[in-house]
Image 1 (cartoon, chains in turn green, yellow):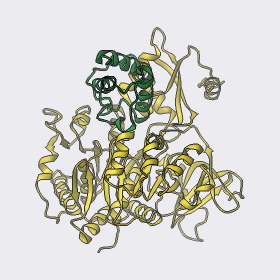
Image 2 (image 1 turned 90 degrees about the vertical axis):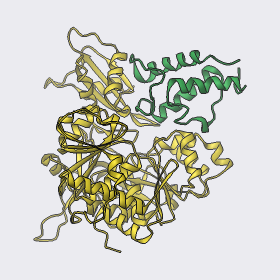
Image 3 (image 1 turned 45 degrees about the vertical axis):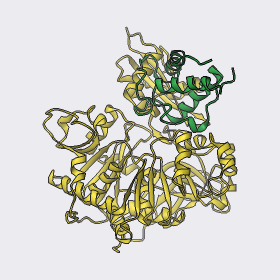
Image 4 (image 1 turned 30 degrees about the vertical axis):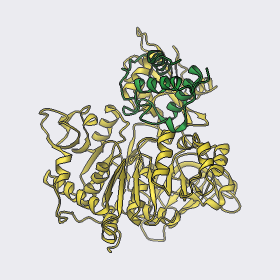
Length: 89
Length: 520
């Protein structure tokens, strides 16, 4: 069963608020990496969070600028995981 | 073949040797040495038409790209000095550099330039779809258009190796970032020295992950140019992107700072299943790799020599540990680089005995010219050599402010800093920069920032602030302000609001007391 995009996006927004940006509002298509908001190490921390939260497994080679460029892109990646049956749950 | 005196001599020689050789790769694009030379000529001529003269400082504020490489070499050929501004910097930090270096001509990305005040510039070359400003009073030119034309190669301005080639901004233990003024001699000597000990050849394919605004990041470009190797430009250091580039381009040399290695090790399974047989060497500088991580790198990269190095922008590079000595452990920084003396001096200027910690002092051809526009700081760090021959003017040596010790075999080990300088994610940060950032929010009365040891970051930044009377800010609000107005590495990992910060009898903040109370 796929996680809905919006559910993932909401968690990512919450994680960003708590770990990176504070109360600043980030649009879903905002360039997280292009704009220098997410460092590489923070991205890896976010991957661990997503894996735990949604019981999915994200391969190292999927941890790329393309997949993590925006909240929408991250949501699409995680949601596709469940659909393809990669998840643990 | 000409002698190597200037940065652009390195380009000219490699172009003459093999004009069709790939010099720069970016994504799917590949540019030969002839392409690089022709594009640098075209931009050099445009810079001269815009009135750039010998010794002028030209800013480069853009993402790592083919154009950014062309810009550095064009500025060099025009007899001017380039100032690379880290693309992560936001407008307040960039404006500081622009003002401090007296930059009137800029080459930059549209989205970086548009955040700046055009009135300070005379001419601007932009990369992007549209001009960054309407009006603004300065000459605005599209970089694409300039590079589409071709130079005839006759425009280069004659300079000596002693001329200013670049200003590299870096932080000290206090104040805002200072510009380290670097000569052509410094850059060329650095390229000669490094390419000698990592044994670079024209067959190397070097990955450029670090920003060109770092002396260490610039070094991959200068060494590649010197030997006629191929430099592969890499913006993303995310594990998937990093491994893809290493494999796809069959990279032979990779230079990194400590935060890069855990990102590479994320791919440990893939590295073990399918080893990187062509990766000849990796180099580390800008901090220590934690012991267990170093062990894992050694086991995941069995075909790769690991060079542990130590350097500071003021002297570029001081020491390296050859790969065969890697067993000496993560604190070992090796011995002096070629053509260089490294001394360990005690407080009275005498050489320390083995085992005794003292300040690392550097003498050699990579000692920079000084801090741009800052005589006081220059005199404090670039001091007369204690061993100049009788009757001669003393040459300048760099006092690093870093404490090291030497063992009985002459190997050096890093001990610590003498002052408040914070080293985080490979960046030097002064507490002042973080404190002024927080105060500039308008809500903070006083701030105290310091570094706390962190296995992955080197140090992480902690800031304790008191609020202005009648102001009511939360930690989240202050964090949002920092993220908006500063690069990620300047944003404190931990922020605390404390109403009454302890004071020393002088009335100044008691930094040590605050640090002690909040370090836990």
